[in-house]
Length: 114
Length: 111
Image (cartoon, rainbow over all chains, first blue to last red; front, side, top):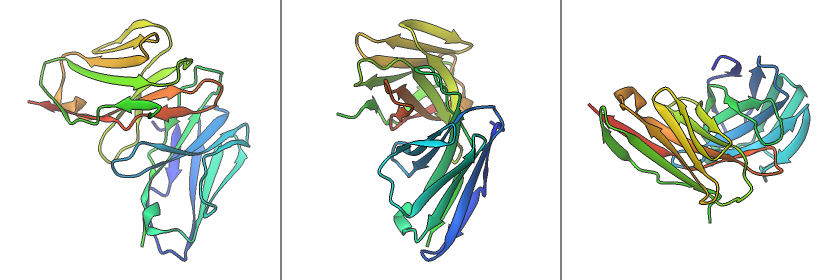
């Protein structure tokens, strides 16, 4: 699905590093999401933005900091991560209409924290 | 009780047979249901969405929804090796702008 792009596709970082993940959607959607997918675990919703406003923070540690400057762009700022934060981070977008939203995913960023 | 439950598998089906994937959910007032396919190392891609009780067909795929029994299923006819993937069931939570995903069922189609 080229409508949602993510960069970088792979990232290796140390626990003291600061990095950012970027997501961009070209579908004209108004809602964007960050998910975490660890091995053998269900997709975990992290953050939801609707028209640039954060509407959901699913008890995510403060070392993850989202930013949504407009409806097309979403960032996830990372700092002082832990090895257990290594996972696939997926961005998704949707045109939110109550009860019938369909989310489209980007290709993901594979993150390894050393 | 998990909000969305799937059998994690693996589910093995011979090529050409029908693969049947099941999902149950706990929120009785959920309105929207989705099946995603995820190949290893890739992101989920939408296969089917269904909103009303009954069957919805799209090519070799049929989604079935039974709100009274709170289950949704996906049938894949004439299974192909390329259908081997993890299938994720997702349910919209009423009043919340989010989907809840099951843990996925790993499907293997054997040639």
